[in-house]
Structures are given as structure tokens and as C-alpha cells.
Length: 240
Ligand code: VGL
Ligand code: ZN
View 1 (tube, rainbow, N blue to C red):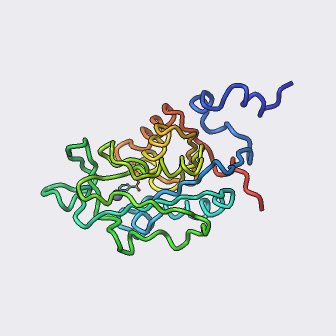
View 2: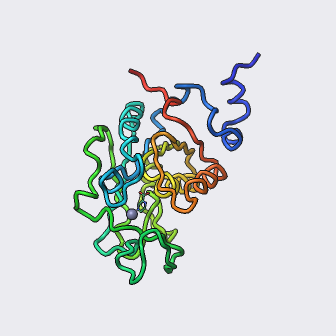
View 3: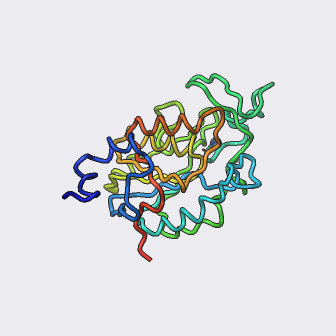
């Protein structure tokens, strides 16, 4: 008889991922290798309790990410890194409030409270992150007139951050995405990683969402459709 792992291998996990996202992998069955990278998205003070765009339970991702990171030899972190008066800030659009949307030349833009302004304490990575081997920090959203949720491509859909080329030159094939927020920077990063040809896992319990007007459910649906694998941190083998 085939065991569970052989059945999964035979069927291919991509098809199954869209059918049964939560119960796919046996505990500890995913072993990151040298062709795997963990992408830690925007674990910054502004998105944590007390921050200007605090994500509910955002602080809970930190110990999960710290533990999981021990399984990775390659870790890249991102930092949302906006200019003062950034186009994504509601405060620069007369009569507009945070969480409303406007139309910009590149498409619809959700407006946010001022957050992650370059060089401020709010833009700093959480001091509780403990990932000494992290090899690269990608800053994004630093063009005043263009937002960038994704770690790969700005919201204009064409300006690259250089991350795909970096990962490819390091021979990375698989990326694991964790951090804040599930429905914005995590999801956009995961979707762009698929478009760039990577195998992509999003670690659900290592993320928290903002959930503005159904954005969280939509993000998971978009990711499933794109072949992103939805996993839990316990699915990843971390040796003691
Ligand atoms: C983010 C909204 C605005 C995120 C960044 O990190 O998900 N969300 N800027
Ligand atoms: Zn931002």
C-alpha cells in the first residue's frame, strides 16, 4: 500500500492544495533546503500593537517566525519604506479617509494612515525578531507616487525591486512567505513570486491580516488559484 506521503507525491501537491488547503502536509514533513528562502514581510513597528497601521494580533507572528527561521539557511526580510507624504497616505488626499480608495494612474489604491516613513521608529523592524542569518533586507514603497505591497514588483506592475533576480542568481527555487499583512503585502508577494516562477508556500499561522472589506478571503482565494500552497508552521521541520 502507498503511504500518505507517496500518495501526495503521486498526485502532486499543487492540485491538492486548492482542494484541501489545511490538511495537506504531515507535521514536520516540509524540509527547507539550500534552494529555499524564507521571506519575512514587513514585521515593522507600524504594523504591530501601538503602531499607526496596527494589524490585529500582529505581534503573534514574531515567535512563530523566529522559530521557523531556524529551518532556513536563506532568509530575506522586507521593510515598507515610504517617503513623507507618500501617495498611499490618506492624509495627502483632500477629503479622503484611511481605508477609502482612490484611482491612481496605475489602478485602484487603498488609502492608509501615515505609516512606515523612512528612518522613523515606526518603520524599524521589530526588535523581537531574532534571525541573525537574514542575508538581505529589501525596502519597498520608496517611490513617492507608487505604492509597493509586493516585495517583487511595485504597484505599477512593472518596476522591479530586484528581488526575483537576486533569488534566481542565488539559485533559489522555493519561497516561504510569512509576516504582515496576509491580505496585502504577503499575498501580493506570494502572487508575484508565482508569476516569477517560484514554488510558493504561505505559512498561515506566521501571518496576520488587515481584512478591509473582504480582502482576507479574496487574498486566500487568489493565492489558491495561483497555485500558492497554504501551510502551517508545524508542517516545517525545525531541528532542535
Ligand atoms: C501593508 C498596507 C500598506 C502591508 C503595507 O505590509 O501589508 N499594508 N502598506
Ligand atoms: Zn505601506
